[in-house]
Image (tube, rainbow, N blue to C red; front, side, top):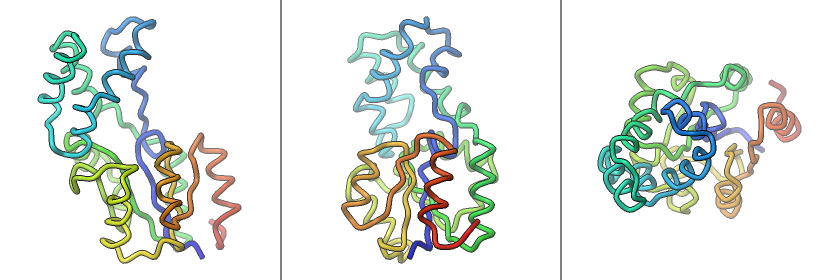
Length: 202
């Protein structure tokens, strides 16, 4: 029986829209999608998520390898943390789940700058019983180690956990360990799946 609900943050609880972020930094519309893919799938950015590189170091590495303007890449990377605004409907859902008696957790790939911003600027993290950020543990999804650490750190049994993430590979990695999963597409479909899968109403 599901008693624990684990949330990813980006694109699930908080806004994560790289194309809009690049637009705010003055990048032309036709360049936004390809540039976002290059910058945020680059190995340097993944190391930011892992906690082994600072954002400024990642900007130097990625701009050099991709032949991009360093100042522009720094501007884009520095704009990430302030862009992570919570979705009001998801905050309401989290509050209702908490009141219904479910234990709530965070499992998120996120760099130290973004973590610091959320902790300083948002109070919704206080709703969670446990939080595991990639940059604070040295592992990133979908690596098995981060899911194992979540279960061990908070003494959770996989069959009692339901994990919500916008990435299908991240969900599949969790399911291989016996954790239930919901592939988040939007609030409406996730809310419907929660109603179908949870044992108690909320």
